[in-house]
Image (cartoon, rainbow, N blue to C red; front, side):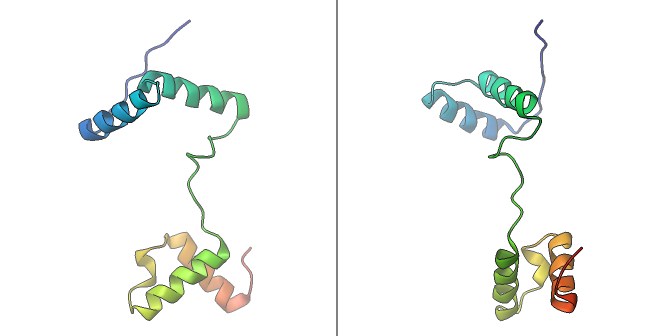
Length: 95
């Protein structure tokens, strides 16, 4: 049994994505079906959709750059990343 899915998305994003998908021989509908099938089969988000969580080295690198530029550390990091790095600096590890 099929079901219809309605999604609100910026017109320009939809237009650009549709054009790219057409070049690849796909439609937006086929892409959404493929992503949902993958989620059901694996029980997880597809790798390309998972939010990137920077490594400890990457977080440290970002902090060094921001400090060198005298910018607030939070400008390129989430609150959790800043908190974890500060705990690492203070205690050596994060629980």
